[in-house]
Length: 223
Image (tube, rainbow, N blue to C red):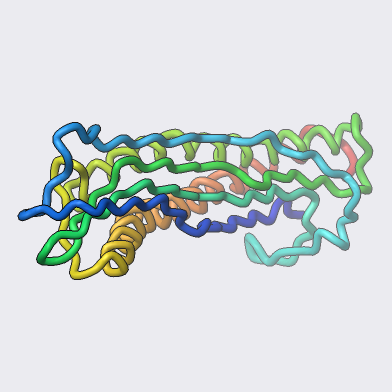
């Protein structure tokens, strides 16, 4: 038998911009003297798992893990959302457009976090509780990944590749400035997302060991 099928779906929200263009021309690309420093905020929501008990073993399916076909008795499904919202400014001057990012807000959360336990096992039964304990290990792994990666996101967004009020950038036009802002955030954030995805899969696999399965089966007499 097999206990889980882990689904990780990464969804990237569209980038939303609050752009402002000022009419005053300048001889060189620079932000106003009173411009505030670049600010980064990262919000993390690890989510609360929904426990479901309405799908049968046949509906949960099977797997060829560990060398032979096994029924799935429980699953943990997590869908991670990575969204970013950028506030940037553009100023036209005689040689093009001067732009910088004023602030960035990033949201890292679990849009969906579901634990499914085969409906053949009623809540409160030994088998139900054993499967639930196993799937909760997967939930903890998934949730514990978020906070360390929030720190990496903060660090990534303070790199010199982000045009800030202290170090603005030049583009040929406002449209190019907007495209460059979007491109730099994707270039900075998507590798962090991909690294997080690989680590989640690796650590989830560490939970699904033969010894963990044996330990779970030993908790109850009948399966």
